[in-house]
Length: 458
Image 1 (cartoon, rainbow, N blue to C red):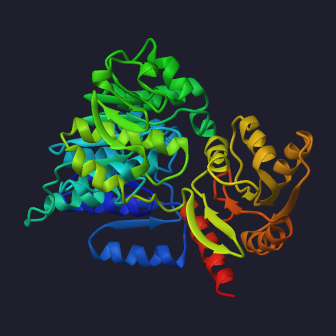
Image 2 (cartoon, rainbow, N blue to C red):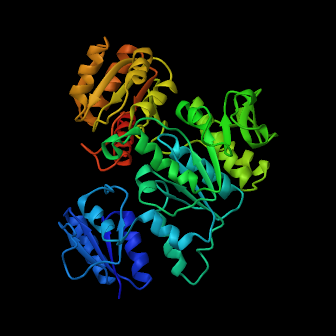
């Protein structure tokens, strides 16, 4: 029996292990962590015949050399173990690539980009599902991709998907060499994840690899980097712009744009823009990309319009939570870099109290700080980045900040300050990863939501 190693005992790793076990592999999952929760998972999986090794790092020195290694998204692609495995010609892939091997008979929509992926993916999935298509979302949103692949082993035809809608991060692009969407979307491109990808050029090349393998390519023409690249690199692509037909980088028959407050796709009026309720120009950009994908998939404009009229957004991205004393509390926990946090501030009313901080990332913070000066009457700083952010704001001649440390203290303080300063919004838009204090940006956003709701009910 062929051996498969799975690295990472998260949701995607477990789904990958179950797929391979169903497919006749001997499966070993390894995770460096230990906890009571992981011990419980270990017992469950071992009852299914899957070996789980906790507090353990795999090596290639044993006699049980694997034929396949599957990597969870959070595991760096360049750790010595994986480099050695690839050098020994061991089949080494990501969890998404494994799912593709089982699900490639269904057409995929693959959505990548620095920011905007999740909202665009949610829009695409909502439109496709609204058109009565069996089109689940997976990847960084919805299911782990291998959870969908598990359906291939069922006998009730539940795995007959019309489309797979996948949000694909750069980590997943990097570990997927063959995944080839029918329709590929690239939302935005700005500096991010350089601690992992090292250079901007490498980060770009990793994302571009997915688009090269896509049959149809859709780009956000309002993104400066993609716009510049498109002038000489993506001649056959479909392009979108919120700035009118004259700003398209392609013939209008391949463009989606806003003209006179109407969305126009491939020279056809689709819907009036006022049907779309989400705030911000960035969300209009996301909308156009989703409509481009839907029209390429043959979905009628009536089905598109009916979904858009009721779509209100996704959790953790400018998510309205509650209003207390006239102050709106908004959860933008998914803003894990400066560019996303800048968009968050652009999208809310003045005056704003901003909660920011967490695990700091590399990047250019100048535009973000410009928005802070424009919109924020106070910044409450939490997490590991608090001291560095305070120094940076001070150096940029912004002094209305306080180091608060924790979310609990920030929420309590924000209401006091909000009343004093007559703020309209308290915005959690951290510009940081969450792993200093939380398991994920979702965990952080859920905690923010819980604290706000407790405060509203007090």
